Image (cartoon, rainbow, N blue to C red; front, top):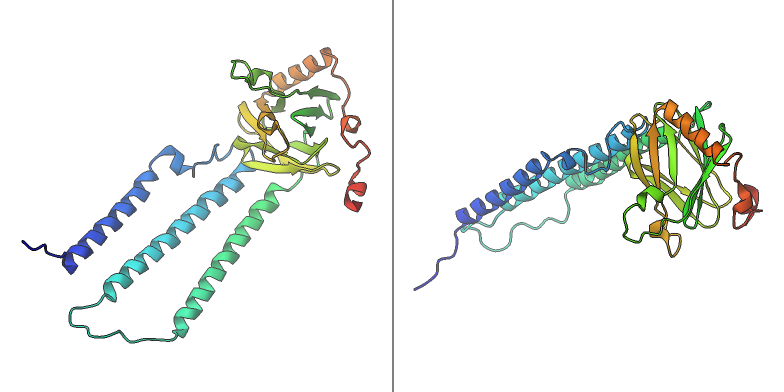
Length: 289
């Protein structure tokens, strides 16, 4: 008994079924809530700046998917249109170059890069734009392995200690907590006391490095109340994984109440460079080094 080899029609039907299955998988995956927001850990308008990241991320994936569909389609077309027929003999005609195609696959990738660069630059410029008159200024100071928060206009502070994640309940409640009033423009002045850290609140879709001797700035307006997780995203030593904090976006009245609670607890004034590992490290000396 001899086995029959699959004919050309069977192969093409199989290829078509695979292509349809792949396309269906991509389309159906877009029906999930996670896929519809690009698997981002937040909502589009959680702050006044988050939509720049959201739109850039989602539209970049849409453009990448469109390019992928085009390339897959061209590959399948080439497989079918230029397949070897039973009547073909020898090798097909050999070409050393095709000038129109070479110009096409040189120009199109360059155009794609320039378009992506333009929209990235627009998003970055808007994200880094500082406010001339923020409603709240918070001097955030990262340290191995916790956080200090100076509320500048309120002349009070909150100093955190390392998380010590031991698997027991309640650890999250002991984390340092940054309080922010909803619908108020906030300038975060990001400083580091010892080594390079990175300030990241995943829900805000924005993070920034914190470098000893240099102040970086992040300006946001939280637009939804709630509690959010924060962490350091720069490997900063043995207990980097425990360098966590909370962010609470609350009403103005609750924010004012918390500020008063800090003053009542004796947290008046500011804690600045005096607790830095290199207290004499100024921006000028850092650049000279």
